[in-house]
Length: 292
Image 1: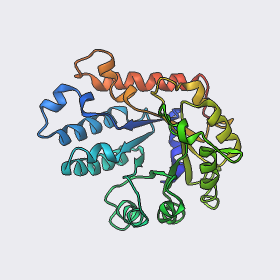
Image 2 (image 1 turned 90 degrees about the vertical axis):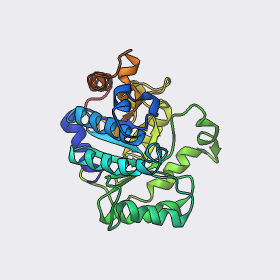
Image 3 (image 1 turned 30 degrees about the vertical axis):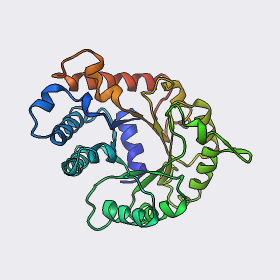
Image 4 (image 1 turned 135 degrees about the horizontal axis):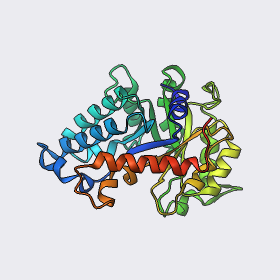
């Protein structure tokens, strides 16, 4: 399911957003936790019920590998079940890849996720580009031959990101140097919308960065990290889209998944609150982005 399919799902729903599942256990409704055998089972159940409730409204989901791993061995079982359920419900599924710090680990991860066993079913992977090209290369054949997507971290939305990612590297900022590097890898994987299967993760909080990235790299699809952050907003996100409203999705996390808590609810109606929040995000984005 290449990035073209993600763009088609965005067009169909008129909603350029992506649900992010990376919330802490403390943000799960009490009744889910109390009625589940383990914390991992509670986490998986919450995620899958949320996905079922938002089906047809939100076109894509970003799932945190780390959030499930930290739940223990059972967390991996719940992760696989959640990824499978998301695909069956019709979502485009992106997985925040496990921490990869060596070439051997990258090869092992590529085989485990997209190889013959494919134990973590997903359409796209989010990887760090700051460890060098040899970490990315094991995944690239799957983009070219298996119609999978990779989104490489260039600029994140956390407050301290500029400490390193916005440093000058010659005449460029570090994160634009990273984007230059990534731009070389997907040249022969462009689809019908013109976007390649090797894209970028960029910061929803930095309008200037998004404006630069969209202008300089018109063929890179952008995942916008941190829509829920205090310094992010729909207007900032709008600079990541082309004139047709294509080429990007904004990742909404706890603002959607934990909307029940922010509303002061007991969590019994968490799906209704999540739906309200998802529609609110869609409406806010639609003020600045018209998807054609």
